[in-house]
Image 1 (cartoon, rainbow, N blue to C red):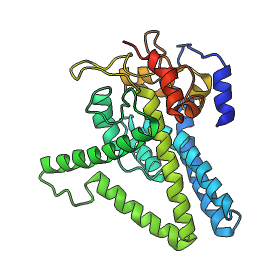
Image 2 (image 1 turned 45 degrees about the vertical axis):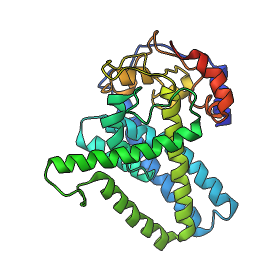
Image 3 (image 1 turned 180 degrees about the vertical axis):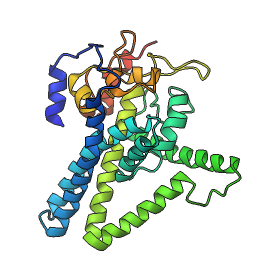
Length: 298
């Protein structure tokens, strides 16, 4: 990540808006290839622990490395899939989130974050002066609580019990418990602890991305979301590795647009670097505040 961060600070951003054709097959193939890639990563991770190829210190190095991969690839692609209308694509998105141990993002992101971004009703919007670590706890816990409430209200509206597999959060938790039991049975308790560590790292990266995407940007609750309510980065590294997630202003402006058709907006607040380039900055709160606070639009 340090290498990518250095590149992002050195290379000039690319603001070209000549997007690929909306029906192009290559962008779809790129997303789909992340499914077998994630399966192979998980299989090699558990196989390495089972066979002893990974031992002691290297188990935890692999867990962190796997977490970085899941957080920067699987969750990013999951985000793209859950915004699609096709049921099979949403299923793939939910499966990728499952591999990251995330049981709330599918519900909360679509039904709260995109509706209330930049307002006090959205816990995934970082406030000015809030550091990354405080945000990680507030945002994660807030989204879990919100997802539970939303699913409970949905089932109440259908006169169904919330204590059933119809409740997305409950269903995901039960499936994870079963999956964890399989991990312990086949690969041992150390493998489970390593997998959980991987999940923590992956979801920390998810919340880091939320943090830098909306930090300090606010709007009125009755104001339509526009290109001014998300930070934008045209860094070629972030655009390429994160399937144009860094063009986040356009994503919130037009949430249904596929990643390869997102545009750069001249009026959007601009991050001074890409997502990798700002990770170590955000990890040091005084440095982050000094760099970003004076860039927040009035």
